Amino acid sequence: MSGILEAISSFIIVFFTILFLPISKTVRRNKNMWIFGSLGGKDFMENSKHLFLYINKYHKEIRAIWLSRNKKIILELERNGFESYYIYSLRGFYYSLTAKYFIYSNFMLYDLNYIPSVGGTRINLWHGIPLKKIGEDANMSTSGSITKLNTFNRLNTGIYRIVFHFLHKTTNYFIACSEEHRRKMCSAFGKVNSSVPITGYPRNDAMFLPVSSWQNDNMFWDFISNMIKFKYLLFYLPTFRDSKRAGYDLFTPYSFNADEAQKTLEKLDAVMIIKAHDVGKMKIIQQSSSPRIIFASNNQLPDIYPLLNKTNILLTDYSSVYFDFLLLDRPIIFTPFDLGKYINNDRQLYYDYDEVTPGPKARNWPEVFKLMEHVIERDEWKAQRELVRNRFHKYIDGNSSERVFQMIKGLHTHAK
Image (cartoon, rainbow, N blue to C red):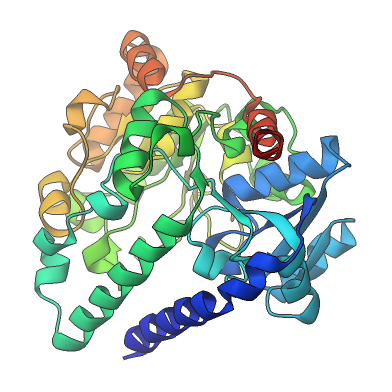
């Protein structure tokens, strides 16, 4: 029932936004004031975070303001010399009414203060090159998770579709990493090429930096480095399941054995970090006594990108993070344990899975452990990774934040 209320409240916000439009349109907006937010206003992460830090460091002429619903984040940013306010505070409302540019990573309705921003320019940096279908392309009507919904949840889904369609139409710009990526963004959100410039993702810049510019990003790395010495870092990052948000088990049904994992990691002088997707709750195995198997919560490790720089081997199933990891040209082990079920019950894919996943595939955990040894001894997938990387990335560098900055500055110049 709470989902229905949330959907209705979203609809009400959109309604009042339309009523507020004549006022918001007449306000003079400051082109050098940029408002940032991400992930429902609750977290400090994603592309908008990395662009925010970059602007604060290299472009002091811009007044960059982070808005959040999380007061801990606000205090933390203030302590570190950044400007941040509660989304619905008087200052949050006033600056949203007078700023020119609004930069976010998910949906403007939740990431920022939607109503007073309606007269500004909205730039959605999004949060991944899509392997899974997104936006208007996500055929939710054929998903098992949708067809089995009760009447209340069907109403909830219907309202969300209306609201999100409105949000996508009122977003002025998205960004992309390549022509291939741009085609999917245009299709998913009803945009034309000129509304989706190819810049690369600001968060990927973190993978090219030896030390993160944000002091908290290295805390988890320091934690595991002080706990155990190791040569190889393996990072397991599975995606969420639409149909099983209450919990999904990617371990027990696929023969995960903690003792076997410990022996393999010890033999390789490696550690494996396991982190579930922020959306949904993955059932995890009981933590073993081995310090080589490390579970990371969202509180401990909200932003994975600085840690990718130190990752030797990525393990994932359908998460778009592997597209970004291709920039580092390091081995990827794919774990599509439930591929058929995922496509039928959770989300359809844009591509044939094998076509765009340049790495060995494992059907269960015993195969994963064997592949760990194999890819360390002999990396046979470099040529395939290069082909997929060049298809999905125009730029292979750490300068995406500067390209996004120049794109936004160019919007004002072009408007003149």
